[in-house]
Amino acid sequence: MEKLQVPQGEFYLARYPKRKKEQLRAWDAADELVLNHIHEQSWLDTETRLLIINDSFGALSIALADYTPEMSSDSYLAIQGSRANLNANGMDVSTVSFHSSMDKLQGSYDRVVIKIPKSLAQLEVQLHDIRPHLHAGSQVIAAGMVKTIHKSTLALFEKIIGPTHTSLARKKARLVFCEFDAELNPGENPYPSVYTLENTDYKITNHASVFSRQGLDIGTRFLLQHIPASTLPLTIVDLGCGNGVVGLIAAERNPEAELIFTDESYMAVASAKATFTAAFAEQRQATFQVADGLEGIDDNSVDLILNNPPFHQHNAIGDAVAGQMFSAAKKALKQGGELWIVGNRHLAYHTKLKQLFGNYQNIASNKKFVILKAIKR
Image (cartoon, rainbow, N blue to C red):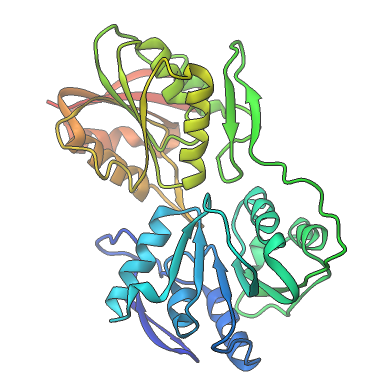
């Protein structure tokens, strides 16, 4: 746990979930830049209604807790991490009001602070969401690392909110200032979008934060070709479900199975639920949960886990998330249960599976991807 030092105070923050030998901080230079600006400009007072969007692990919400902010995020881990960091600093968790990305905002906001997300689509839908809740005196500041701020980023602010300009860069971070234009016509919010799964009649729903929104990514396409089939009453988990297409095909090939869809993204789980409901209506039941991996699923209770593991958490790239998913899968699987994964060949997931399960099998491979199976002995 490292100490964030900003004009609002000193706060101890950790990423979530906590990992041994964590080398990444729970905040970045963009957080520091916007907190310094807010202090220097006396931007807030006790009467201000403040909304914070995309606060990774609570750096902004905790530093600005005196103003009782509302925090909106698509990430379950970000919200849980923010709560944990409030506790770690001896602060009342109820000081911050937390909303998921699928919650409807209420009333109007005087000030909005946005951490610019990696996904331009996610930013687009967030700007559409907040626009009806701004008034003539509202002010919007967005903060991000320079590498995340492009002409297309600024164009979205101009199109949806109003006139936009940026600060000078500092420590590779920059601020975006946006004035609300009540006369602007931003057009329709394009999300969620829907596409038809190739060679089927299935309609796949995609909220803005979902990976590969326009069609199947090539890794998932490869996995779908090899999903096992059975007439047994299995319990199958689509781990990191995204739009739910993997679980959908698993349900089709396993007509007696109980399906569980889980993801840490609220938009992903909402997408998976819409996809599954459109395919099966009332004919099939499934469980949909926003959680940290397999959190809430009993140990030794699952027959099959299907996983296309992500290689990043927020803007941090690595295989730590995949490792956590594999470890959780081993606990959740029954004796003889199977974990099936697809991944880029160069990621060497077989090494992790061998260490955890003591075995693995190469189900299929091509020039770019490999599908691996591990069995809980």
